[in-house]
Structure formats: structure tokens, C-alpha cells
Length: 123
Image 1 (cartoon, one colour):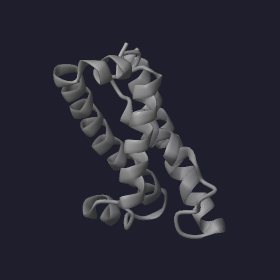
Image 2 (cartoon, rainbow, N blue to C red):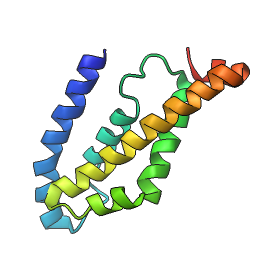
Image 3 (cartoon, helix red, strand yellow):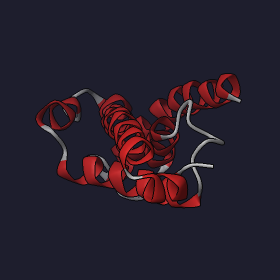
Image 4 (cartoon, helix red, strand yellow):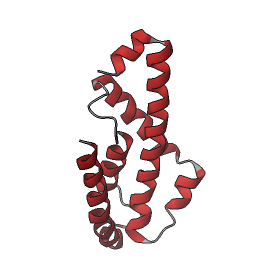
């Protein structure tokens, strides 16, 4: 599963860069109609975690990813300055990496110290 998950991330990322580059020329800087970056960011959030997390864990991970995608830590925000589709795609990948790390930490804390909550978040 992790191998195919990783292959999907890499394939969609490199498929998305030229598409996002072309669509940015038509729709302007980081157009909201381009969503392949959101898909890749979400996949990165759960890399090497599925099928371990439950539906509740997936929802939590999605909200954590959206937090990093919206708040944009300085290094994530700066990555949007990359040219064309690179900036569109990479900021969501970085938000996904941050969300992956935070979700792992939350799951570890929940399972270790709050078993009632932890058991709801993992299978």
C-alpha cells in the first residue's frame, strides 16, 4: 500500500505541475479552480498511515492539513513564489508534510495517553 500511495503522490505531482502552469496562464496566479494540488497535499498528509487511521483519524488529518494549507507557515508561503505550477503544487505538498507530522504526533499522544480518543482515531 505505501509503495502505491507514494507512486500516486509522485505521479500526480509531476502530472499536476505542467497542468497548473498552463492553467495559471489562463486563470491567474494560483487559481482556485486548480485542485490537483489539493489532492496531492491530502495524499501526502496520509502517506504511510493508511489503513491505520479510522474515519475519525482521516477527518482529523484533513482538518490539520487544511489548517496548514490556509495558515501557510512562512516557508510554505514562500514556496508559492516558485514559478508556475511548481509554486502551486509545492505549497500543498509542504502543508501535507506538516500535517502528516502533526497527525502522527496527535495519534501517538492519543493512543499513549488518551486511549479512549486514541482508539477512535486508529483501527
